[in-house]
Image (cartoon, rainbow, N blue to C red):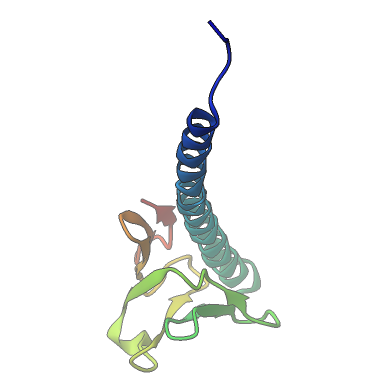
Length: 143
């Protein structure tokens, strides 16, 4: 009795292996989106905390302006804009006085540490991070 595998058996194993490998990249891309989204939420929270600290230390008002359409934000007193992940859905909940347009809103921090308050929601599919700015204390938290 000969030992070994036939050509047909080897081809079937190769086809099954190829199909299994084709399913792996989508699993990794979801992980990258999760990491990007979490990183963006942390960077945005850090920018908001910086603006609050700047307002307190320099005794001036400081703002972080977010443009939902361009997926960008900027901090007053700093050059340049920062980007948010292109694949993310962004929702702003700002004070009415800080709504600049349909797609742009700002979060203002005052020298006493308080702010206009609000929320920024970053989501992608089932993933969701909410950056919360407390109006009275100016405290920034990620949920």
